[in-house]
Length: 266
Image 1 (spheres, helix red, strand yellow):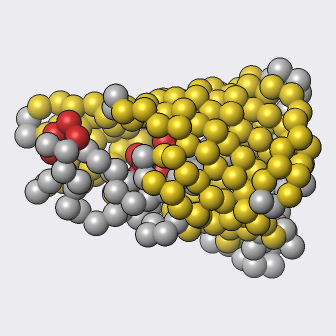
Image 2 (cartoon, rainbow, N blue to C red; image 1 turned 180 degrees about the vertical axis):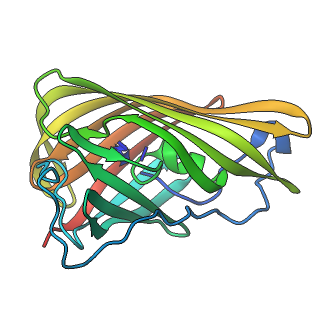
């Protein structure tokens, strides 16, 4: 979103990786460059490590090898399944790896007294993954706000911002380009939600997001924008279970639905 929200935020956050069309500068042709992969984040982890005291959010359980498989349809990347797995525990957080059909995204998350903070864009939202399909050699410049608070009260609102610098794959060239991702979240209450993984009493969240990448294409500046709104559901003790996203990708609209298929929390 990935929230990612979203998960997911978020992202958080969804989504996937087949090719994103770059229509404005390539005459509706898909880029020839291979799909990018995020550079591995720094820091070491241990399978025997215990999450720190702040990694205790019931809406996103943090345990080594915990995994969630989701199915997404209707987005700009078509229909696909993906799996999020906690692949490492860090002294101040954890590592989340999202495995898509042809792409792997890795994020460091910090567990702070206020909540979880994703340190890289990825995992969870159609917006974030679509942006990743355009960017390689991704580097986060600055992160502010929260991806998911430790405690969410009725009607609570929060914000997350990320700035980045990447190399965008254009037909025949690579160009250095700055980008931003901004997310506003609000709690909307509790609902019963049924997915393939079961029926859950879930916390309902609303997300508004916008992502921009500025590209210098043969001397002409071009801005690619992905923005939209999402409704997300998180089940206590389980995690992210469903989202419905309405997305505008540089003038083209999509509605994407993502649902939990299965999960394993050791």
